[in-house]
Image 1 (cartoon, rainbow, N blue to C red):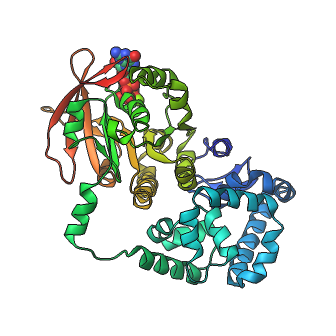
Image 2 (image 1 turned 180 degrees about the vertical axis):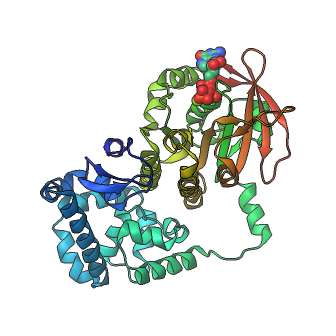
Length: 418
Ligand code: GTP
Ligand code: MG
């Protein structure tokens, strides 16, 4: 994460315009996630020297990257053994793989056993974050190809084999019910709010909290980061949290207060929250793309994105950029949804602002920002509004299996309570 936070941003350039990235000394297009940059963030130190040589002129760097991509394609077509010799010299890289291998040996073992996966292919897959059958099976081939550098035929074979191993296909509704019955949940701290969700915030989906300022979106996000660490019998998942902060409103002080309210050791609680500050929309997208290995490595069971579209709203200004903005948000949401497919015991919470509807005279004059893309992307949507004093009202707006309803909860020093 720390490495990712240092990546160049091109924050000032307009959408669709090329800009020169100071970090990896290449041209990028604003609004697109760039493969070179992903590689750069992961292997910064490894590539430092060669990139410096390349950076004499932008044009040259661009040419080099084209050649590099061509070479990658050729290498993909080589036999694993031929490639093996080249890669073996790369000791740092081996150590990194080894570390990953130790952390998730079961998942990696399963990938290793796929037909046609030699050491070189395995390394490429793990390096790009595809260290489990689920991550291969659920990711579109184009993304696997782009991020791992594998050829299209190899990718197609790997996906097919992973799907077969995971038995992905049709199943009976009874099986689906069996799965849903055992779904893991996180308590919010308020019984009423838990009831609104049918017994706590469920895992395996993306949940959106939207509402005006000070309605408690960030407070709920903080509280869940603490509660997810509780043992299952106390309403947690014995897991850790990843907090992507786009607005600079994450406050460890609040975590300490909330942890103390639950008699938890606040030092431990803080240690178990991985924090990433997203400085712009590209960076936000990048942090989520990099999350796969982190989730496994750090036993992450909850991801917070607070807020989902703040950066997009401020960066994509004017009607002309709308289509581009919506497309990028859509891809970002699908990246998040895919994580819940890969990790069924993962809960993703996104917060969203509201914008005013000038044409509404009666009823609620606000609507969640981001339009239909966000509405369709998130599985469960909850609207928050202010009540008296510390009280807040949560309204279930959209959920595949829950009735519309309301719950009242309070924000106190120790967090969310009834
Ligand atoms: P925006 O991010 O501005 O859109 O708002 P938000 O919905 O994220 O608001 P947030 O969750 O940050 O809620 C802020 C509110 O929580 C404050 O206005 C307070 O009312 C309440 N709050 C925060 N800390 C405390 C605390 O220590 N004690 C109490 N009683 N309330 C608190
Ligand atoms: Mg907030």
